[in-house]
Image 1 (cartoon, rainbow, N blue to C red):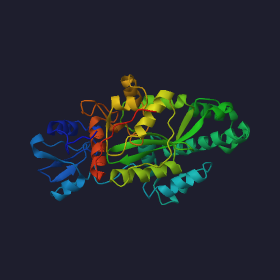
Image 2 (image 1 turned 135 degrees about the vertical axis):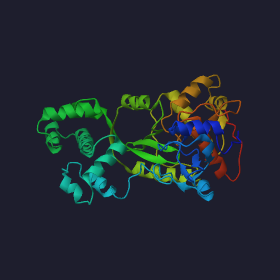
Image 3 (image 1 turned 30 degrees about the vertical axis):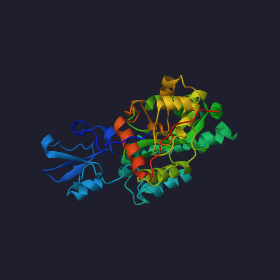
Length: 363
């Protein structure tokens, strides 16, 4: 099933999104101001122009081709949220030696301002650099405890003056005392900027566990669900997140149709069956919820399939955006219908040939 999608949402919808700084429209359109000849992201916080003085474009390049300059405040050409070159050596050093002590003088040896480092960590991780380093130590301590190191030795290595202080910090971070470390699996998380706005990416040793738009209302519930599955998260990086970043960049420019980064999706058997069905929907095509239910052998469970679709924690990677309503409208999407429309446009425009997908019933 294929859709013919307009390049842009209705004018009034875009105007409302721009005036309200609606993050769910990031990358869906760019606002160009006729009086200043500047173009902005939908979330730009600069003083809003009069409605009659704005027009909209589907891409930054289109705005530039029509004579508009990028806004210096919202920087529509920049990919905020990635690890910039100026701070990467410092973060690499922290991850290589999580027990190292970092004074202002040691940070300055990287030719960095401690205040700038602190501000960047607050923006990216919601924590200070000191807290970021502390969580790295606790994450390393979790790994040590799981392989049999004694609590006393781990507490000393982590820099705690007392075992009780270490126990308290560990329990606060991971929800269990150090003696129950085996019950927790460590997740590293970071923000990844995409053309549709920042996303929270989380990965364990075996693969990516979450990729979600940071403004999705269901995100807090999804994070709580991961705790129920035994996960404990600390800010940081791992090879799967690095691979994910590269593959997302290729996907958004139409150069990648199949993600290869390993995925970990804990859930009920029904949810897993639904998500497996989603992975079988070919790139550049769509199917209805009814067709998806039929494909997993549960033709009467359309509503349950839709609910499982909405509980997918791996947006884009498990392509729940490819499922639409039976009347060919887009239906709902956790990241916002405007984003869903944009994802489908990216895929359909990248396909040399459009095909119709009708899932087959299981044998």
